[in-house]
Image 1 (cartoon, one colour):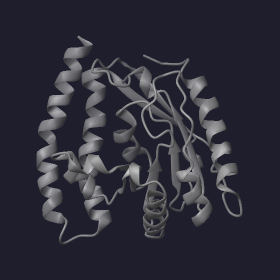
Image 2 (spheres, rainbow, N blue to C red):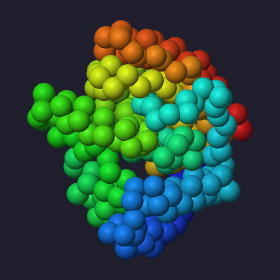
Image 3 (cartoon, rainbow, N blue to C red):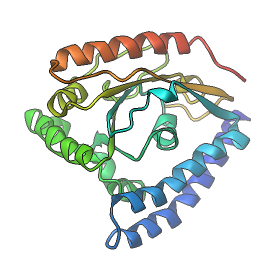
Length: 240
């Protein structure tokens, strides 16, 4: 039954994608980032809501008061597809650091382009790092938050991959705060798994990490320690 409900959710979400992509493409030449973002994210809000009645997956947020008033960098655990949708309902207007290959996907890639992601070619090494600094600085100056999953890929529940330093280097360069985020979405939406399991995902937002005058290594270590410890606590919990 969980598999059947997941398939039904996926089909409805896919069908709902097309009108939003078409609408976004029509808006692209005549609007700026914020109007496009608000329109496109109506789709993500819908598909996150749909997980409730169809699959029994809901969520709650702890630490919402820790969200700073200015554009910042979100460093988060990455366990599933859930957080890529839900963060758009939880945090201010944002874009993401992602693999360049995702932009080549039909429909999804077109939608991603409309929110001006920082699309990295991982094989470029130092050049990719410079791209992150330049484009990340541009987005932050325009008031656009940046979401970075520092492990670089999804990690299964109970698994922790070493944090890459890109987010911390961008924070050190720009002086904006890091907002550390932990969650247990992998308990409901396992990595590389179609069956979705009912429960309430907890998203925990930590106190902002100040970055002015600090090294990228120190910033990264503080964020990693908080996210790793809080995720371990959340992975022992799942509410029906």
